[in-house]
Image (cartoon, rainbow, N blue to C red; front, side, top):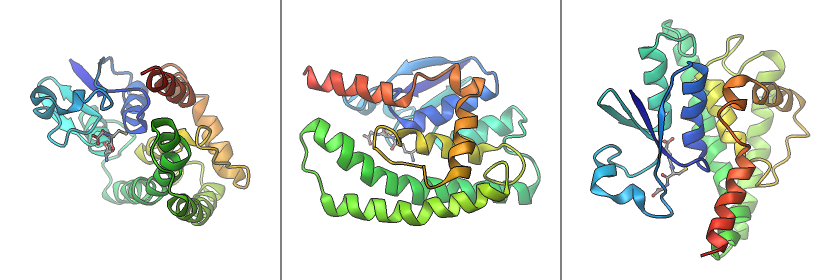
Length: 219
Ligand SMILES: N[C@@H](CCC(=O)N[C@@H](CS)C(=O)NCC(=O)O)C(=O)O
């Protein structure tokens, strides 16, 4: 029995949902909303000691951190998403880290200042926004170069690195981040968004954000 804890508006949660779907694994989705501080209850902290979403409980094994969860799922269910070969794994890890640390961090600055700060009445930090956009202008060409020569992020085979980047980029539309200058990246993303593992589990991320916004506005 797999339980997934979190809410749809989180791209980290989406990442695990993509992997679960790709692996054809059934799961129970348990809504845990940080906005409602449901992530700080003793019960949830016993599953995710950091209080972050997502977390999973798989037959009693509790785990947090989306990339660790996806690696565990791929290994446990013996999937090509994270093959046994040490070098292939290392390359998948390298691209996953690049997207999770660098791209996601820059995206986070833009999303916070263009979406969440205005939505929650917090001050927009124009300098942080500028820096985030500047970093994305450096990082997207790297992804473009990699994807113009390879079908997938870590080479020719679809892997956890693709699932991770797909989720990291889910907020492009809501944060008004254009990928027009990056045709290979855009094509790679459109192709993956048409796949059943994405389509069947996910209302568009933008819609989740809009729902979250309306919920906040009505408070
Ligand atoms: N590195 C973590 C990031 C998770 C994360 O930042 N989750 C956010 C939602 S997207 C969260 O739980 N925020 C609530 C909080 O920090 O209290 C992962 O990939 O699982």
